[in-house]
Amino acid sequence: MQATLTSDNGAELFEVPIPSVGARDVLVKVRAAGLNRADLSVLAGQRHGTASGPGTPLGLEWAGDVVAVGDAVKHVRVGERVMCSGRGGMAEFAVTDLGRVMPIPREDMSYEQAAGLPIALQTMHDAVITHGQLRPGQSLLVQGASAGVGLMAMQIAKWRGASCVIGTSTDAARRARLKELGADLALDSRDPAWVNQVLEATQGRGVDVVIDQLSGALASHNLSATAICGRIVNVGRLAGMADNFDFDLHALRRIHYIGVTFRTRSIPEVELITQRLQADLWPALKAGQLQLPIDSTFPLKDVAQAYARMKANLHFGKIIVQVG
Image (cartoon, rainbow, N blue to C red):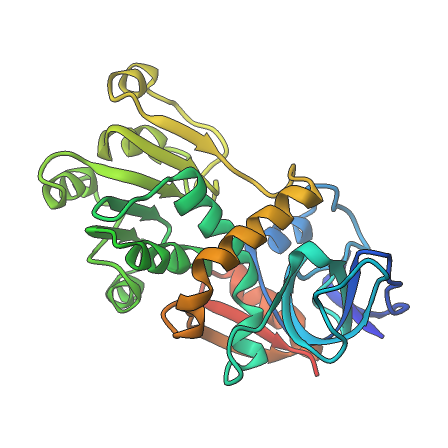
């Protein structure tokens, strides 16, 4: 089969064997796969969990048809349309643990639509609901809201009954579109007045929850924009891995600062996240209340161009690779 691996030339297609199926595994004929920024880190030579170096399989989420299951798999059937997370999904076939497999929630949902959902659903249900503890009537700020995971965070907040949802983007055209996907207010995080704008929108309190995908120099500014006893969930560090942090402001506002990543989570932990999001979000998914715009689609043979578009930060929503 053809699979996308890292090489000295970037993302390339190679002929590799079809993955074997373990007792808890599900093998899927991939129809479409979604791009994620974590793959860019691997392509740049950085480590992502245990993945690094030339020959690393790319693709963290995909959708397709089940072609084989392991002996311990009971609730997933051969022939079922599914969406999955894992590794190696940018290929004609991909295998993953049963705890990362979800049925495609609607018959009329395309493989392309489904392929962009697993990472956003898992990441943002865990961040907004489990760790952010967002409750109806509370407010939420998403730093870096125009990527798929950020758009999903805003939609989950609206589904949860948030009173005010704020999203940031440094691109004016993207900020204009954020209101289509859950934002009551769209801000530019490079604007020196953005903290004051958050405070004005929340009657001076600050937001109850910040979903931070940027950090870097924004870390201490987020403290100023967060309500006393609010929560900041650090999901990403696209603006910098380290910077100054105002420990006194953190203490004065009694803020819960929570870091999350899937890189150090065990298989049972990821399975629990998947179970929780299905228990909570499935009615909304079936009703079409949670969905992500598709920015662009590429055939598998042009996968390198798809990653180039993501690296250039030209997209809004999900970039999808059509496989078969």
